[in-house]
Amino acid sequence: MGRSSCFPKFRLARIMGWLQIVLGGLVIIVSLSSLFRFYSAGFFMHNEDICRHFYGVKDAYEEGFDIRAMNDRIGEVLIRMESLQDKLEKTVQQLEKEKDVVAKSNISRLDYKKFLEVEVIKPLYNAHIALRQIRLPKAEGIGNSTMKEEPLINTFVIEEIRKYITPKENRVGKVNIYGTEKIYNTIGHACVLMKKELEEYMDYDIGSYCKDDWNLAQKLMLNGCDPLPRRRCLTRASKLYQKPYPINESLWKLPDGRNVRWSNYQCRNFECLSSKNPKRGYSKCTGCFEMEKEKLKWVANSSLPVDFLMSDVLRIKPGEIRIGLDYGVGTGTFAARMREQHNVTIISTALNLGAPFSETIALRGLVPLYATLNQRLPFFDNTMDLIHTTGFMDGWINLMLMDFILFDWDRILRPGGLLWIDKFFCNRKDLDDYMYMFLQFRYKKHKWGISPKSKDEVYLSALLEKPPRAI
Image (cartoon, rainbow, N blue to C red; front, side, top):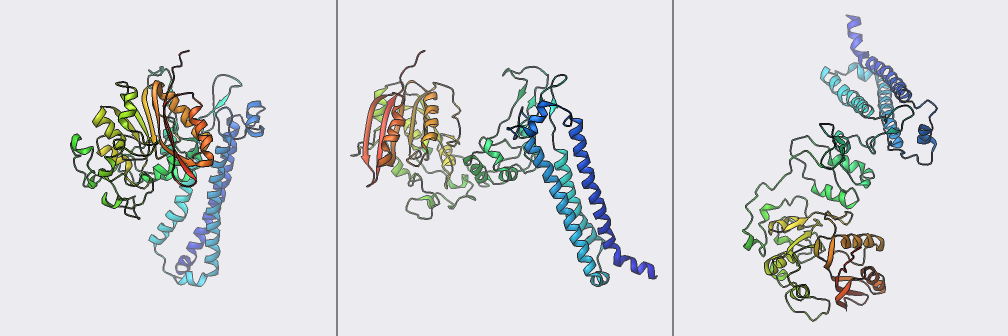
């Protein structure tokens, strides 16, 4: 009886002691396993390519293999195991200090099970998975071949990201219609800098409903993690979704608020988005959700020389303007007016900067392009008849960034196409710099106007025609 009563008192302490021994052994095994994998890959042999991996100037990755990411992954595993060992050691020390309390306590098997699952098994499992996901470079060819591995593969832990960025080989082993043996899924390079947010975004159950996290996706995009990886979950929609209005009615009618997911906006309906509401949650394009005001844009006469009428612009190229791009922030009014009065198809860029701009454009029966300033526009060269921009690229924009954007616009605008700069504003002292940016392409000037916006700021509007460049 004496022995059986003493055993429960010290059972937990013995378990902790054995766990320490097992964990120490695991650390040794992991270290030896890592060394063995390096040896098997030839990393301890005299090889100039491998030496350059470790001792060269380009230590991030060379020849396609990310040494730093793999080193970080192994370090992450070892840190996890050391953290677990420290936690167990502190638990054992605490048990030693409280022997009497432990002896008198009544710890159930369920408590033991929960402790082992949460504090021991789960951390060990995560460390194990992280270690198994490390990919060493594969030798291509014969002999002293170049070691190659897919970039970024060892950077991420979430399996969905790793599956997405891994090249997909053609099933039949032949070249596909694109002329390649593999399909490469891409992500923005800044995704590496936002690893935590991207792994949160890609942590879901395949085939289930996605989290209502479009705002996280937009945050990633705006910070350079663009393009985002595709996801294999079902997107959410409003529970009260209604049929959209007919096309003739939808152009100038505020959409049904039940068709928008409002959970990540400050407002919860379209009425709240009024420009009169100081708590509307957005600052760009105030008044864009008031259709009576929107109807007057580009058709009502103005005394300002920077306000161009749509009819005057299209009269310069009668019958030639068929498709175009509206690059800015808005609810699609420019596209609606061009469609209704001139039968011109306009694609409107849209980001949900505090309000449902993209949803509103679509519910009006127009085409939204969910794109950031970071992206190369997804159109082929010399295809657009018109590019219109207003209310987005203003005097805050970096000149180098603006230069890349303008050259991209020049790429997609066809010879004879029109670039309509609509009320661009900047500080008066910066006007010459921005004027040079617009005029460097030697476009023909059809319209040009400058008007004061405030004491220190000015408006600039221009209508420019791309010249032919037959070479």
